[in-house]
Image (cartoon, rainbow, N blue to C red; front, side):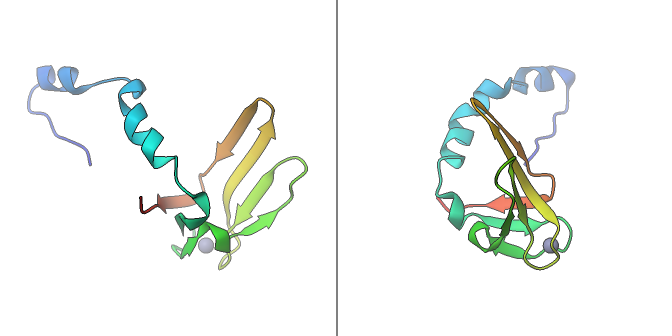
Length: 96
Ligand SMILES: [Zn+2]
């Protein structure tokens, strides 16, 4: 995924801010989330998001791995902001 650059000048020209990824990420995050495949960072099991275990919903939601029970995703909603912590996810895969 990363490119190598032979000269510092090339790297400077190739560096853009996050706005340049808005189109790509906008397409990626506009998917039906329940069909996303989640790989657990702890046990590497690969499950659809719909198979994860959901705990607690008053202060926030925690989604755990159905195999090893590791915390995969935390979501806290405090309108108008949402915090999403996915540090337990090794990868998220979607078919568009
Ligand atoms: Zn796991």
